[in-house]
Amino acid sequence: MSDDVPTPTLEEVAPGVFAYLQLHGQWGLNNTGFIMAGDHLVVIDTCFTERRSHDFAAAVKRTGGERPVRLLVNTHHHGDHTHGNFVFGDVPIIGHELCREEVITTGLGTKALWPYVDWGEIVVTPPSVTFRDRLTLYAGDTEVHLIYVGPAHTTNDIVVWLPKERVLYTGDVVFNGGTPFFVMGSLSGCLVALDTLRALKPAVVVPGHGPVTDASAFDDTERYLRFVDETARSGHEAGLAPLDLARSTDLGDFGALHDSERLVANIHRAYAELNGAAPGTPIPLATVFPDMIAYNGGEVPKCLA
Image 1: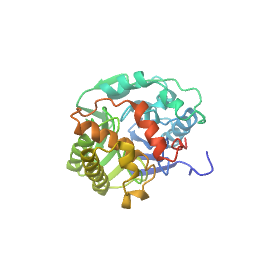
Image 2 (image 1 turned 180 degrees about the horizontal axis):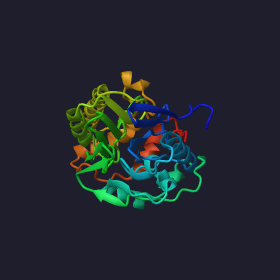
Image 3 (image 1 turned 90 degrees about the vertical axis):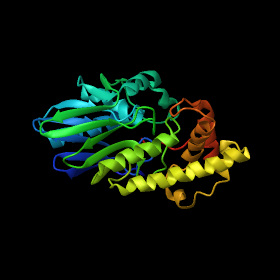
């Protein structure tokens, strides 16, 4: 592990329900989780690199003992949540139908952004079981609802909801302590997704990045989304380019969130929707990421994986 990255921690958020936290949640440091369901395990997401994914699998093994992993769920296609799928062997992987498509299409493309990361030997392994809107799993006595809420962070976001335990794994629809990021999804869709999450009334929220929290995270996320929306509407009307608008924007309290360079990417998405693009319509990342680098003082945002 890098000296400036805390060792991952395991938090039991309800009896037999765990969050595996890679704090502080910056680029490449996602959260995962797992459920001990009677005599077997259900795993939620994996990690960005081979080493980190094997470390997570070892934590699952230490906690679950001889219980086999029977299912793996992917909340969306990004590599920090799917690159490690292969370490769990030949188990069914469940994801949204668009998640499977995106994992196959994007492959290991992210490696080009951060060539210095020790990726290991990653075998791209997409979901083998897909669904469109909702799917209910019965893992032992634990009822697990998979709910599609995209386009939001991406086109293919699902959340994992345990109604009896009132635990919600949000994937990257929620970042706790980090700047929300929806250039591959939708600003308006994120707002709709938050309403869906609120209606569940969870007691515990496991975000895609950052510490375990509660439903107050939805309000914090919405404040940022409204801020981007208002900023983008003003800049769009004034004819400002996304980078120029981002550079001239005072982040206020949002400046305390890490990975603030995501602002310019989020403005790109907001502009696309103001121009009439449907939620989730692809935006050329070859335009967006150079703007993020420019906003970040000419440096590629640091990946701590």
